[in-house]
Length: 116
Image (cartoon, rainbow, N blue to C red; front, side):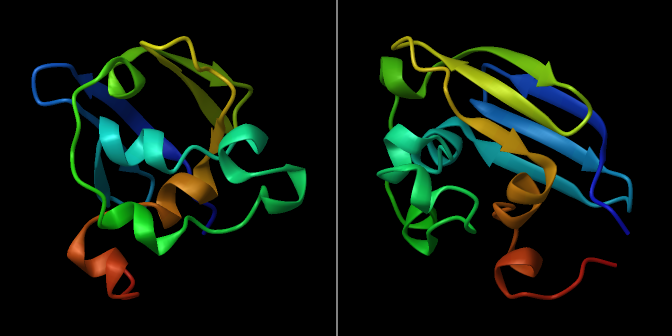
């Protein structure tokens, strides 16, 4: 089954972005996780490093509340991704659905188990 969201919600109080997927799974991402996993060439260290799965290190980094992790806006990119606009002006990462699903921080997904 192709990963597609059926709903996306931003909670600025909790500092999370939630995605409900077409298979019923719900992913809840902290703003810090999303920013630390930014898939753009600048954050990934060049175009050759783009398109890979998220670096496992992003799941262990501490939460922060700074302009770089303050989500200002979310915009759709066609039917395949979103762009996140950050408080420090960064807006270059295109977070496609497969990348976001691989970034899901829940215990099931981190253990590599298919959600029920």
